[in-house]
Amino acid sequence: MFNSTRIDQFKNIPTPFYYYNMELLENTLDLIKTEASRYGYHIHYAVKANANPKIMKLIQTYGFGADCVSGNEITRSLETGYTANKIVYAGVGKSDREILTALEAGIFCFNCESIPEIELINELAEQTNKTARIAIRINPNVNANTHHYITTGIEENKFGINRWEFESVLETLEQSKNIELIGLHFHIGSQITDLSVFKGLCLRINEIQEWFKERQILVNHINVGGGFGVDYKHPDENPIPDFVSFFGIFKEFLNLTPSQELHFELGRSVVAQCGSLISKVLYVKNGVNTKFAILDAGMTELLRPALYQAYHKIENISSNGEEEVYDVVGPICESSDCFGKAVSLPSTKRNDFIALRTAGAYGEAMASRYNLRDIADSVFSNEL
Ligand code: LLP
Image 1: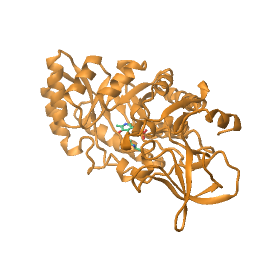
Image 2: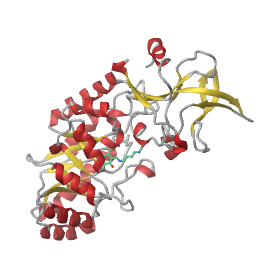
Image 3: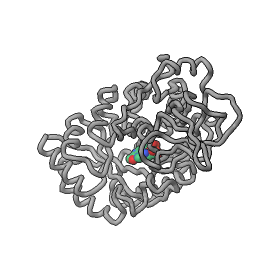
Image 4: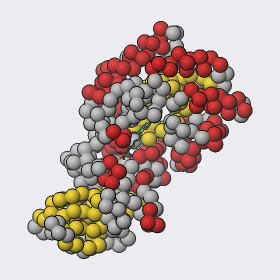
C-alpha cells in the first residue's frame, strides 16, 4: 500500500493526517456502479461516513445521490454537486430548521421515523406551500449481529416505526394533505459481514409489503439502507467489498413489482478502505510489563477504537526491524485513547510513520477538538 516514494512524500506533510487512495476509491465506485446498474438499483452515498468535499465530489461524479442525516449534510451535498432530487434525509430528531432546509431544497424523500415527525413535516410543508415526499422508516425487527452500538433495526432501538404502529401511521397520513407517501425505508445496522442478515431483511420486507398491498398501498420505492461491512483485518487482501454477492442477494430474495425502484444508502463499504490515518511515533516508553508506542494521533482523530473497541490494522510503514510487541496509544488524557494492545510491529522508534488502516469511513467524520487539538488535514493520492 505505501511504497518508499509515497513514504518520502509523507515526510513533507505535518502529521497526523488522513491519506486517501483515490484510485482505490475509483475502483470501488466503478464496481458499485457496474453491479448496481445491472439491476437498475439507485445508490445514495451515506454522507455521515465521510463528508470530505473532495471525496463527496468524486462519488457524485458516478451519478449517485446522497443520504443525509442533518440539514448541514443536505447543504454540503448540494454544495458538492448532488442534485436535490437524489437526496434522502433520515434521522429520529429532525429539527424544524432542518426540515425547512430540506423542503426549501426540494429533496427526493424524507425517511420518517415517527408519527409526530410526520405531523410536523406536514405542518411545515403546509406553511411553505409544499408537498413533502416521504418514506416510512420501518423497524423490521431483524438483528444485524453487529456491535450493539451500531445495531438499529430491532424493536428496542430508537429508530424507525414499529409494526404495531402502522395503522396509526396510515390514519395520520390520511389527514396529512401536504405529504405524499412514496416509499418504505429500512436500515438495520452497520458493519454487517454476514450476507444472510440481508437475506433475512429481504424476506421481512416481502412480508411487510404484503401487509401494505392488502390495504391497496403500493409505494414506488423501497430503500434498504446501508450496512454492508468491510474487512478491517485484511485491508490489502480485500480492498473492495464483494458488491456482486451483496446486490445479488437483493435481486434473488426481494420481491419487487416491475414499477418499484430499489434504493441503497451505502457509506462504509464505499469509503472505508481508501482511507488511512497517518501518524508519527512521538515516544517509545517502557511500562511495567509493556512498551508503549505513543503516537501523535489519538481518539480525537480516530474515535472508533475508543468508542466501539473497533479494530483497525496498525502498521509501522517505515521500519523493517525485528518484530516486537507494543501497546499503541495516543496522546489524549484518557486511558481509552488506545489503538491496540500487544500489537506486533517491526522495532519502532521516534519519528517512524504509523498507518491506521481502513479509516476512510467514520474516521475524519467523527474527529473532535477535545483537548483543543487541531483537526487533522486530509491528503489525496492524486494530488501528491
Ligand atoms: N442509512 C442509515 C439510515 C444509517 O443510519 C446509516 C449509518 C447508513 C445508511 C450507512 O451505513 P453504512 O453503509 O455506513 O454501514 N459510527 C459507526 C457507524 C454508524 C452508522 C450509522 N448509520 C462506526 O464507526 O462504526
